Length: 453
Image (cartoon, rainbow, N blue to C red; front, side, top):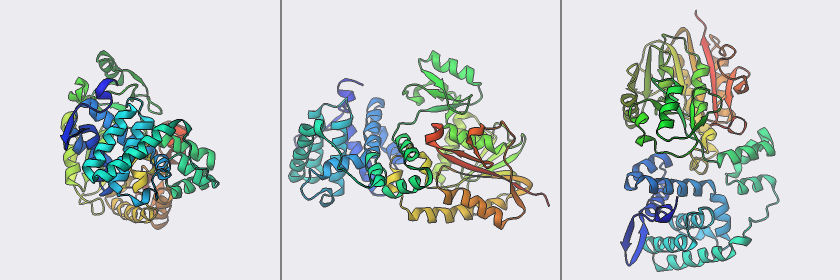
């Protein structure tokens, strides 16, 4: 990006004699949304219509990037704010974080713009004193940028957490499981921007590739799933004719592998009990006769319906319903893509690492047990139950499956036949996809067979 658009300066708001770009105003509002408990993706989608396509990309780069680097940014700020960051208003802290990210990490933004815009935002939202503080801190960082370094930390887990901007308690768990070197690779993966991967729908991948290339889209092979298409450059998908015609949907290879691993027999009636946004239900519909796509959120089901209309997928039946109380009759197979901590998708959701608390593991695991038990009741004898998450945590994955099998002797683990999914993602008959080993999102799944009585 270049010029004023690259700097996020397309739309200016004159307030009190100062001008702030709409992109930066949206970024500040998004930070406020996160502090109030909203998730980043829906908050961004709600506020993004205020921006044109280029400013939308710039704002996303800023906010998502700042969240990926938050610990590092805080370390630089903390030593330059008298009394430390903790004494400041949380909104002002976020404004400073956004300013530092522009100043140190966004090459498209001149230093004067990063400083002046942050100072003006601080003035408008917090008054003259806050603007003077922002000006002093950012100008000092600009003077010292070539000599910046992180504080020396003796504890190796603390050092990893600071250097790669993750909560310490999570880093400690991962080091205990995989060791420091492999954990550092995972942290690097979590701080990378994920590629966009497309699944052809109603068209073979070679035809979709040709259609995209004719529209000037650069593509490359996707990892692990040969008929998916990975985009080699950023592109506005909604502006593509292939999108409007319903010729693809977006799905990370890890999610595709969950459905491949499920290996539902052709002609089955399948229930996807936690279906939104609908990618796995669409993938299941390639072989199933009918897919009941259930989600308890009416708003999420409405988004699912919009996707189904665009893709013309009549065999997917959207339903509002609670997976803990699925009001459906016995079906051939049930997919439980359970709500989870999402630790396998941190690269895609950088806000999640800061929102998550260690107590959430127990809360989430209890909900998953309830959903898994309820799902089992609507599988016909001889049918399949596929339990999956996008978590890396044992409490949400293997421990759930082992508990379920121990409490339900009429069920057994039954992996798919050899070759259905790559051997590299199978572990003791379960699907285990890890970002640092496979270069995609994290995913877990276990394929369970109800023994016919």
